[in-house]
Every structure is written in structure tokens, then in C-alpha cells.
Amino acid sequence: MDLADATRATHQANESPVVEYGARVGFAILGVLHLLIAWIAVKIAWGVGGGSKEADSSGALRTLAGSGTGRALLWVAVVGFLLLGVWNLSEGFVRRHDKADLVKLASKGVVYLFFAWTTFKLVGLDAGSHSEKQTEGFAAALTGSVLGRLVLVVVGLVILGIAGYHVYKGYQKKFLEDLVEHPGQWAVRAGRVGYIAKGVALVIVGIFFFVAAWTADAQDVKGLDGALKTFLGLPFGRVLLTLVALGIAGYGVYSFARARYARL
Image (cartoon, rainbow, N blue to C red):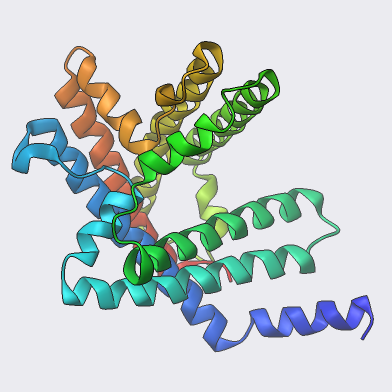
């Protein structure tokens, strides 16, 4: 089989109902997770229930894992994320001559495969995994050397780039290009505030990486949970965190529209 045959076979596989429906399930699961993250963030902002859970994908996944129905949904999420990852990577291979599409699809594919592995570990192997501890562990391996701290700076720049793209994509409504048709004004509004809110939170995550590189202290690196909790230290912090949480909930709502209208 030559490269052209492999491309045709990959394209045909991507158009199969199994891959398409699985990918759409993945988008719907993302919607559920973002709504849970938003709810946890609101609880943290106002001290409801002690605010003990992490306001990120790890905390949302553990919330789902706390019930039998939730664990069953997590197994569905594993399959959905896996198929989303495979679809993006294979579609990147099909569109490999367009370097911009290749980079975007490959990056998304890796992220979704990471989600699949994280979810699988949580529901099947390691229910005690915490994303913040994993992030600190990653940073601790790098802060001990100049080269490692340079890597942290590069990671921070990448995160800031992703954050800026989220804000731009939301403000300019570029996310509509990912859909086969207009999803309705409710989904557009949710998508705009959702992408912008995620971008704002990621800016703070990126800054944490710069701080860790400067101080050589791995504990300065925080993930989404740490970024959201940072708002509590600002004037009107509870209100700000609540607004960002509502934005993340908006992204979750948009994800349900994307599950139906995504261009696959």
C-alpha cells in the first residue's frame, strides 16, 4: 500500500459512522465536564460544600466517578475521547499538505488522547489522581536546571498562545468554522463567552509557568484549578470567579451544539 492508498483508507475510516458518532459523543462529554468544572468553581467561589474539589477536568471526572451512573458515563467518555483523538490525528494525516491544518489537528488529537488516558486511569486504575500534583511533578523535573527552566518558559509561551487563540476565536466567532451549519444564536453566545473565559483562565496558567521558571520552584506551577482560585485573591474575587465559571459553563453548552453540528 502506497501513501495515496493509505490516505484514501484513512479518509474512508474517518467517514465511518462509528468514528463520527464516537467523536460526537466526545464533544458531548466535554460539555458535561465543563458544566461540572463551572459548578465546582462556583462552589469554591462562595464556599459551598467546603470548596474541596478541584475546578478542572480532574475534579470534574472524580465528581462523575462518585456514582455508578457517573462511572458508566466515564467509560463512554474514554471511548469518545479516544475516537476524537484518532479522528483528529488521522484527519491531520489526510490534510498533511496544509501545514496549519496538520498542526491544529495533530495538537487536538494529542489533547483528546490525553483526556482518554486520564479518564481511563481515573475510572479504571487510579481514582486518586490529582491534576495539580501531576502538573507540579512535571515542573519539579524541570526546575532543577537552566535548560529545564527554559522548557517551562517555552511551555508558558505555548499556553499563552493557546489562550490568545481562544480569546480571538471566541471574539471573532471563528468557532463557527468548525460547524457544518449555524447552531442558533444561543450556541453562538455560549461559544463566544466560553472561548473567551477559557482563554482568560489559560493566561493565568501560562503566567504560573513563567513564575516557576523565574523562582525555580515547582510549586509555583498551577493548572486550571490554581488559575481559577487565583481570582479569589483579587478585589471582587468571588464575583470574578463566578463570571469566569459562567463563561466555562457557556463553553460546556456550546460543546453540546458542537456534538450535533461539528464538521467531521
